[in-house]
Image 1: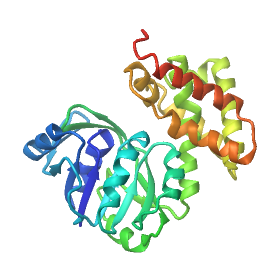
Image 2: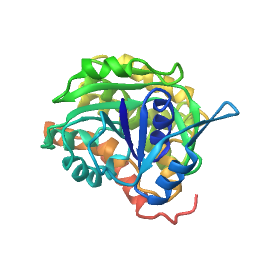
Image 3: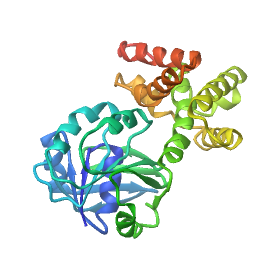
Image 4: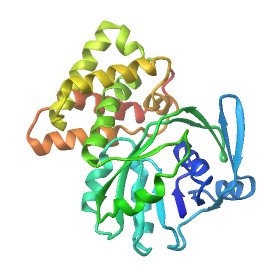
Length: 299
């Protein structure tokens, strides 16, 4: 199968490496320099102290519609530059792998007739250079049909995957995405605001109490069926990643735009549509956006 990976960040490079083991993969990047480097050097994967290499094609734009599947790995706030390019190609399968759910409102309103799928990435990955990525934690890619979709046909191809890069189909896209969103909403903004590693949310009583308040507010907005199971998952992820700095903390420290809109923005919009108050989420969102506007702040 011919697969195009849109985005050359950590998730894009990780997906490109593993999918290239069984498919013909092209990485589509924003910068011509990165595309040229991938075309020449391939992609290097670092894992458990070992290095691996895979050949991939690369380009700096979607110039044709020859792909059987496009995997969009850019961040949610970068999607507005991708949509116009996707609207110019003929109908194909497109899988969106964004953190949070801010893009869901955009996809619902999107008029293109592509077969649209959404998913989550549960792997740990860190981009080391334009052509290299470190696989820091084995998880899974989980995906589901969103609209105009033919999941059985796509699943028949994607179920043949690498043991350390499993790809799993889920029936309910809302349950799939909200399962990860609740974790991100509870951990990422708080660690970014407090400038602490994930585990401190469990060990410092004041942090733990505030995380529980955020959970309860988000859970009510999302109308999760099993709140107890969702809370246990939040605690488990926090414990498993206790020594990690969340991606939002890393972005704030690096003076980059965060995924606050993708994670908290979605929840706030849903709360507004439902006529609910969301004081804790609104405070966190406003605080993170304020930090984004002050990239030179010393940590």
